[in-house]
Structure formats: C-alpha cells, structure tokens
Image (tube, rainbow, N blue to C red; front, side):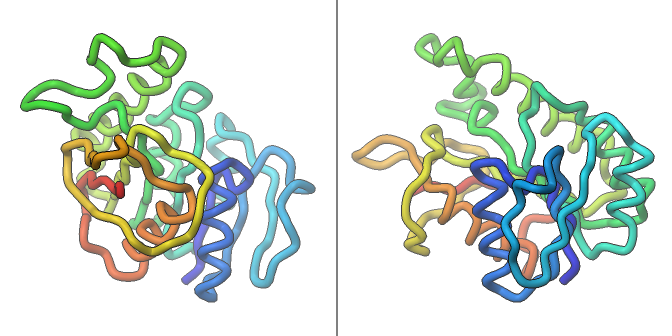
Length: 203
C-alpha cells in the first residue's frame, strides 16, 4: 500500500516506519525535519507542519491510508481529521493513548487518583481525539489503537494480546513495546478488523 505516516521519527512512528518497510509498503514520511528520516527502501521524507492543513492535504492525496503518530497536546485533532477528509483518503489510523481505557466500568485510567500528573494533559487530549472520531468521523474508516499504560522501547516479539476498551494487564502490570505495537498496527492496516473502533494491545 501507499501510506502517509505523520510523525515518522517519533518513538512509535519510527517503529511503524520500520514495520511498514519490512512488509514492502511505500511510505511518505511527513515530519518537521525530513533530514532525520532514515534512508530506507520506498520511503520518501516530506516536510510537513501539523497546523498547515493545505500542505497536509497535498501530501496525503493519493495514499491508501494515513497514520497519525503525533503528540495530542502538540496537534489539533479537528484539523488532522479535516485534512484526511479533504485529501480523499478514507483509511485513517491513529496511534492512541492509554488514558481513555477503562480500568473499571465507566472509570478511565486517566481519572485514577494515582495517574501521573505529568501525563494527564496528553492523556486527556487523547481521549478528546477518540471522542471526536466517534462523533464526527463516520465518513472515514478510522481506527484508534491504544497502547498499554507503559508504552516503551523493547523487542519485536509478535506475542501480545488485543482488547477493546479495557486496559490490559498481567502479573507484571500493563505494558507493550513500540515494536510489537507496530506489528498490530500494520496488521490492522493490511487486514482491517476494527473500522470506526478503538482497540488496545498489551502483554
């Protein structure tokens, strides 16, 4: 497929880029600093600004799917959704956050009393992005993949669990590597199972 990857040099974005290349997809890597994108087969780095909608639309046009891997507090979800819509691309995959996952019926992780204050703003914005997709983007084939609470560098094992709206945990807590997250993300792009849905991944 021809994929536009917004935020291709971030922690999650760089692993998504590697996974897409590994599977033979063509990638337009949209970043603030194109020189930071590694030289890889079928990858074209393009300079883009998250708040320059006209430029984003021009970069997204003609792609089979768009992946958004950006910080929620450093972007405008409405603008991103509108850019995808105006580009004519139907498939929109969002690297989500864990904060909006439920830890008990009706209780989100971000609302837990011991949720780290440093991450609260980002987590809250992620929940707002998901709500916006659910309420305004029925014309797009969107998917929002929430990682586990600990989203960290690790190994590409291919061994993980998938869930829906509840935080996945095991005896070691709640975690997923960027590398395994990328596997699940590209799996979803290749064989969609969660159109207009959020799902989650964890060990």
